Length: 307
Image 1: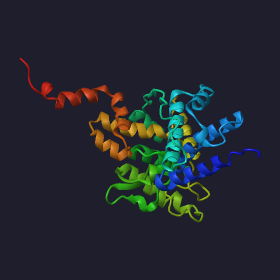
Image 2: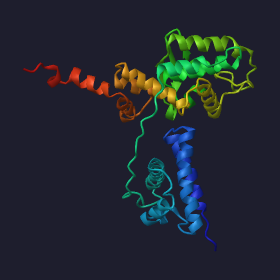
Image 3: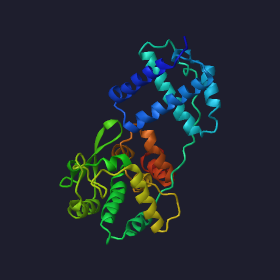
Image 4: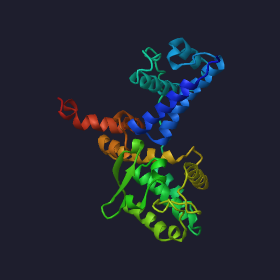
């Protein structure tokens, strides 16, 4: 009887359910994990080996990774993390007796410091919009919201009318893993959003199921990630900024400008929705004076006058 890889498909489906229900991960995160596992499945299918995940051992994993050496260390680390999560799940479900990645070392990740937009550059980008075109009221409001609140792209496009609490100066954000957080929003961002909602958005006939989303396309549907990227790229180009600018650039600027201004790291972590403060700490490296001022102001050796 010819062996198949059906058991892989069953386990992958179970893993998907586990990630969605038990871990409550976002659709994007679930897709990334499943992509890592399916890449391994494609590899073993090509080699005609390991018809059952329990047949996977460390040498097979190493061979798989060697054939993907073209990937950067960050991508390799993420792939190993995805596979480690899959086999850990199989361990919990008693499908395997040990994980083949237990002794696998994760490549050292080279954390690149992001290019940070200056405040004048952000103003130039927002000032590049021709407001005689109705869609540019929306586009300017989106960019200001990304910067004013430090939102991820997915959070901006999922922002709903009921999430706007302007009377209290906050918006409610649904972040990774469907975790909710409250983020302050300034008067300028409130003004731009209100002008868009009361003006161009009110003229759009919304499609069923999209009525509550703040930012809509001309067909009355929720915007896509790709559309936000196109808006940002075009605006940066019109502003004469030659650096690589993406929607995430405004989130970086939000965090960096706060820390440069003396904001507490824990507060920035909370507003960004970072689960681990080490993720937030990367922004301190963008402004060494922040670290120097912190130790000078709070370390007893520095605070005490010396003879």
